[in-house]
Amino acid sequence: MQGPTRVRVKTAGRSDQEHYDRDVGIQITPSILTADLAALGAEVARIRSAEWVHVDVMDNHFVPNLTFGPATVEALARSTDMPLDAHLMIADADRHAPAYVEAGAGSVTFHVEAAAAPVRLAREIRAQGARASMALKPATPIDPYEDLLPELDMVLVMTVEPGFGGQKFLDLCLPKIRRTRELIAKYGLETWVQVDGGVSLETIGRCAEAGADVFVAGSAVFSANDPDAMVAELRAAAETATS
Ligand code: DX5
Ligand code: ZN
Image (tube, rainbow, N blue to C red):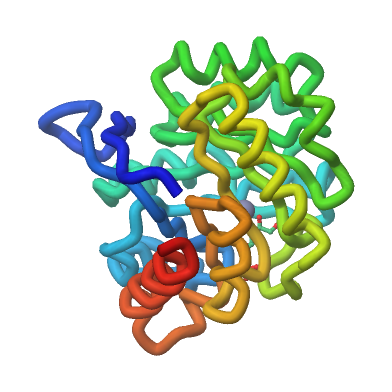
C-alpha cells in the first residue's frame, strides 16, 4: 500500500474556500442510506471522523429502489463541511451526473453499465471540479475498461448488487479488487479503489488486503451505538490488514 498522498477535495459547504488539501491513506465513507433519514443533518454529525459522506442516489430504474436527488445533495452540502461522495445508481448517467457536481458533491461515481460515453462523462465531471469515479456491478469486469483508468480518480468495485443496504458481502468480487489495483499500478496511477456493500469489521480486512483504500459502510456504521467509534475501528482494521 502506498503512503498517504495529498489531494484536493471540493467541499461546497466551506465558506472560506472551495477546496482544501489533506492527506489520505485509508478512507471511510459512511453511507447515509441506513441512517435516520428524518434527521440527516444530525446523522452526519455522528460521523465527523469519516473522510466522506456517501450518498446513494437511486432512480427506481437502474436499481429497484428510489432515494435521493440533487436537492438532497445540495441540502447536505449546505449543512456540513464534510465532502460528499455521490454514488449514482441511475440510468442515463451522462445526462444526470453533472447536476450532482453542481449540487456540491466532491466526488461523483457513475455506473459504467449506465453511461453511454464514460470518457466524456468523466472529463466533464473533472472539468466541473469534482473527482470522477466509475462503478462496476459484481458481474462487470474491469479489464474491458483498462484504457479508461487515466481518466478516473476512483474505481468503485461493488461487493453487493446495488440497490439496498444491509446485504451480504460477496467474496467473489475480491479478485476484481486485486485486478483493479494491479492495472492501476501498471499505469503508475494514484487512482483510488472503493468498495461498497457489506463492508464490516468482518470483511474490511479482506478488501484492504486485496487493494481497496476507500471503504463505504452503511449498516455497519449506522447500526453501531457510536457510529464515529465504528468509523475509527473500521479504519484501524483496514490499516492492520495492509501493514
Ligand atoms: C448499495 C449501496 C451501498 C449500501 C451500503 O446499493 O450502494 O452504499 O447502502 O450499505 P451496507 O454497508 O449496509 O451494505
Ligand atoms: Zn453506494
